[in-house]
Length: 329
Image (cartoon, rainbow, N blue to C red):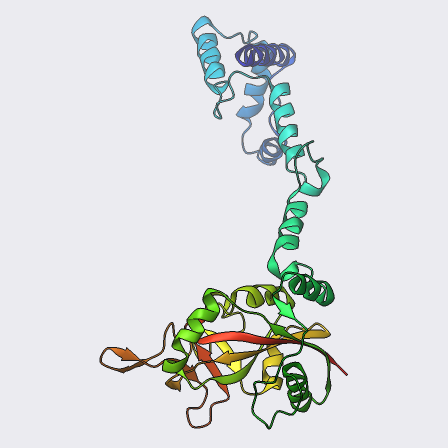
């Protein structure tokens, strides 16, 4: 079809050329005409040639010339982009279609049954841990208490005499009130940790003792896992690994509160920790440094002479004892 169009164009050009030759010599381009007109006095024979053009017979392509023109037309009509022998109107329509598809994504209608990229990313962000809604402290505590993981029933205080209080819960409350004078202690509950975690802790208590009572601050979405299963070093590293990749505990409750998130009501655990033999920690340690041939330290600290922050690398080295909910005054 395209070759036929080209042949038609050639035929019309030939008719137009015949018409021009019948009326006179073909008109030169404007620039050439101006150039010739500037030299018309220098080339008087050009006038004679122009006059003789009127006496020439009209030009008609001969058989060989016409065949050559038709072959060139067929070659020029050969598609270069693999779309076949398409007419100009079809190619223009295809080009218009490409222009339409290049429109902004926001202007295109979303096909039925599909989800836009904005909606998909929003749903992924909503499901990511950083965008999950923080569980209510009251509902979480009620649920853990109902399952026997937490208890508000007082017991005889197991702590040293300097921690005043007639019960263990009262002693922890008084201790925390003195450590956090600008915070309100809303409630203190005992963690009824039992099972494999408690058995492993008790099994190594003589080897890695003496026990230290340290604080561990965390967000509310981690409270249930710690209360039920104990501490897990695999969740460490959210706030860095300055002393190594392990579970962190602090002597001071104010330091532990830095890692409780930004909520008004924060959760802090009082834990029993068995640091054993410790040394100064380093960034990114996977396990404690070697002590001598075949043995290693048990934990790392910020300052071996006066340790305030401990990092343990075994889950059985720490066990949660009490959970406290505090709020800024």
